[in-house]
Image (cartoon, rainbow, N blue to C red; front, side, top):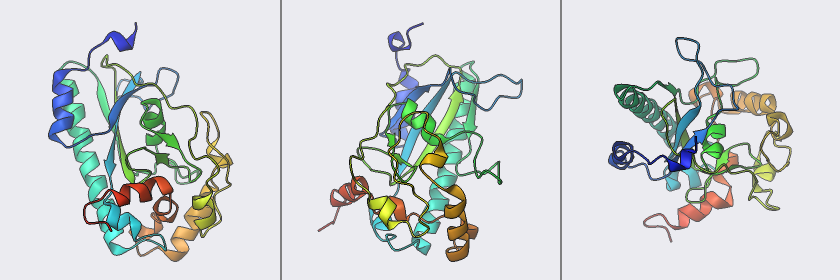
Length: 240
């Protein structure tokens, strides 16, 4: 079936507008292994959206995380989880399966991964690409965002996947990483995370230097220096 022939439900557009979500889309995940539901069934699609972080807070962490960043990070994650649960319930009311993907949850502490990458759903939904810092970059907000994902079997029009990097020759994030965890490779679909990021070096640095912020689970320096993010700062109210 051609998903593009399926209209976006009015209720879904209204839900997004009511919650101030401007950048969102639907990912075709037929070829991906998604977390199963309670019956063991996987999901063919996911609704993906971004929650922008305040530009002023992001701009201030180029030298390392601040308490304001840590607090906002936690606040936005809590909001994402609440909204994702609400959207899943709304989809369920209409007779379809839906399951939210928790924000920033590590379910594999050895490999430092969750049940599914939010950024994979986001790239498949056409929201952006993966930068050299191994994070999603969007045109409007750069990588100054948090991501939300709700898996579903509801028939929805899927976005056109982003299948290339638009980082060009930029190496700002690689040069700024204090852990030297970024390898400088340009992303393309299917590239292993290990070819972009030494996740253990990143994790160890955060725990050694920023443990007082969420037990060393956040840093943000590589995102803070991304030119796509600083462009959004210039558009922020009051910026001079």
